Length: 342
Image (cartoon, rainbow, N blue to C red):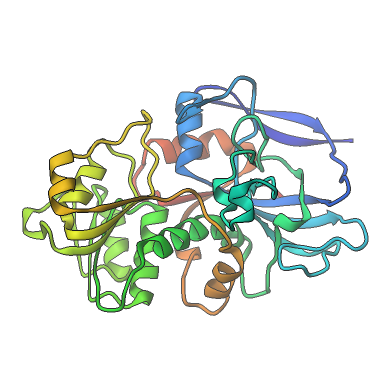
């Protein structure tokens, strides 16, 4: 038997193909994929055939923000919370597969593992296919209060939550977010929960600025406003424009923390050295996430973070090419594009 998979065959080109059904090895389960979120890093690979210094050398299945239903689970298999996994469980899947043995993993930083693979990043295929084999400990059972779309959104929420932790936000801080894509908008919600007293958001797209304002931003702007210079205790750079890092440094007060979350298209980020040095800024690079899924699930289940509200578009797998084109062109109203696979 076979199943459908969406394969990136070249820059800007995704083709639907048939693949053999996978089987679970010890420690693995087979998941029937239901929903997959399209991420900015997917768009890098879709548009350029690479991300950072990783080039795609063969046709690749993209997709790392996803959930599905367990359809094959050997007896005694445990999930990421050390709970039994059973056929029929709805699960969100952590796409980063760390080795578990290197120094970084042993020190509790699996996101920094140098021997990892990542679903949807070359050479490991991702979730834009009907069935996928994944490590059981990368699965987290979803409660009924988390929707299928919400399950896919737990991955970007985890990225935002990890960045927030790196920023060491204190109650009463003044904060700023540069870039109001899905990660930036989730950071807005988390910063509001964290108790910041001011939250300035910079975003060129009007509908995303409006969303940020509705989500808790106290001020929004399309570009850098000198009136906001040196006012923020902590700044989160969540864009991938050429000047987003420099803008973040301008917004930061002397001694502030600047957390860099975005991935630049050309693998470079630019900041004026004298500006960052004279302000004594702490520049913190955020790498994916670490130990965030249980907390992310709890935030969504309890209604403390609304991930479903960010979903602007839903496409079936048969229209995956159109889904990627809409996202990559930033067409009017797009925030988060979801592909329904199952």
